Image (cartoon, rainbow, N blue to C red; front, side, top):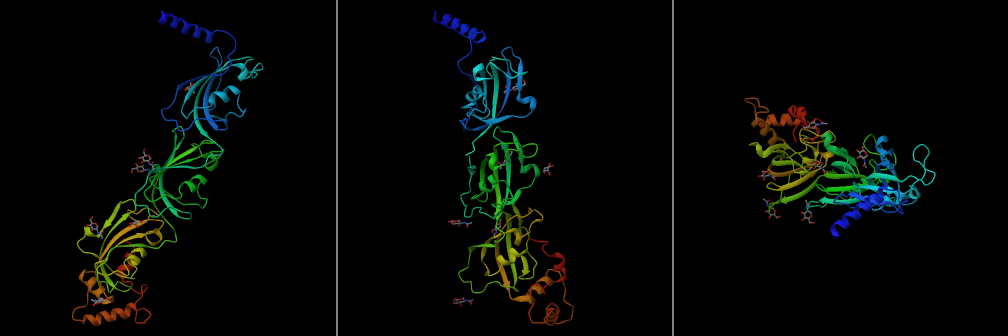
Length: 417
Ligand SMILES: *[C@@H]1O[C@H](CO)[C@@H](O)[C@H](O)[C@H]1NC(C)=O
Ligand SMILES: *[C@@H]1O[C@H](CO)[C@@H](O)[C@H](O)[C@H]1NC(C)=O
Ligand SMILES: *[C@@H]1O[C@H](CO)[C@@H](O)[C@H](O)[C@H]1NC(C)=O
Ligand SMILES: *[C@@H]1O[C@H](CO)[C@@H](O)[C@H](O)[C@H]1NC(C)=O
Ligand SMILES: *[C@@H]1O[C@H](CO)[C@@H](O)[C@H](O)[C@H]1NC(C)=O
Ligand SMILES: *[C@@H]1O[C@H](CO)[C@@H](O)[C@H](O)[C@H]1NC(C)=O
């Protein structure tokens, strides 16, 4: 019977492994647990980190990396390890488990290791690979998701705000910006962050998701960092870029709609009325003046709103629509404001409704809003011209931005967007 003779054979084989039928020729490798996804297999010259339990034939443990709480690390295939391991680890992937049987001549031979491994011992290893890289590795970038509209990408000296999840190759989590409820904010290409991140974030666009894999020589090296990043570890960063800007940026103005006749445009000193929507670059809505009946109104140059908005509302004709991108130094700066994170870039969609020359119109509107009153029985224009003289602090016949500060405004500077 074929079947029963097979069974006999299997029994003989099992007996032979457990009986002393002379030493094995080569390492016996049992790949008993191989991950479905194996992007990389260990090759000669790679550096690996692995955990293992080592036992002798009688089951006696002679060593276990777990007892030291530290994975074993070293180069493979170049004679730094016993030959049995050099051969037995080749071709492994991260998170693979193998059982190795190493005959004495590929282990510690007829000498053994005094006090640990007897002479002529066959060694039984149970191994799991946790990390692999090569000295020649560079930063590896995979784009996970890229917005179709990507007109500008990160370059050296840009300031980037991003979220990240950090894991080791075997999936162990080591850090995440989300755990601090705040983005990681940094300049790029100036050495403020590990070299691998500095180069891994080059060319990224706003809203992009990227995976950046960093070998230890471009990360935290042989020493690792803190409690959670071991020495010589490969790091995986999954990154989501919320926004970036350059300190040299001015307001970026995109004209969305311009009326055919556009002879007169807004300038410093003009009284204007406008509507706007404000959001962050990831689309988070911050404010909409449409939620209120009346449009916003200011005197351009009066320092009532952030500089970026003043700039962006200048040179517009009535009916024009613009989309403004305002960097933080012309917005709410490093400290942010209500709903606006520190150093955030803002987006304003504005529409100009009304424009009038100068101071008088502004005061009339303030009065209409109940923010001030003219004295009864007093000529209004006379009153305005008196106020003009009062505001024209250096009497040069013009009211500059610095001079034009009504009491209510001085208390309210930048309180609104
Ligand atoms: C080694 O032994 C420990 C404790 O018995 C076990 O938790 C671990 O999974 C073993 N490691 C390997 C690689 O088999
Ligand atoms: C980006 O560039 C494309 C063409 O290159 C243009 O059509 C689009 O309007 C630009 N978008 C922005 C936000 O500048
Ligand atoms: C982050 O926010 C969540 C929910 O708002 C809160 O439970 C958690 O304590 C915050 N963590 C930190 C570090 O502020
Ligand atoms: C980080 O992990 C959390 C939880 O799994 C996930 O919601 C978030 O999108 C991840 N972020 C990145 C940048 O991968
Ligand atoms: C605007 O300018 C055009 C020529 O550029 C002129 O024909 C037109 O009369 C002007 N309109 C007003 C309201 O000034
Ligand atoms: C602001 O948002 C509202 C509602 O989404 C929209 O109707 C309006 O046109 C937007 N205004 C501008 C200037 O984009």
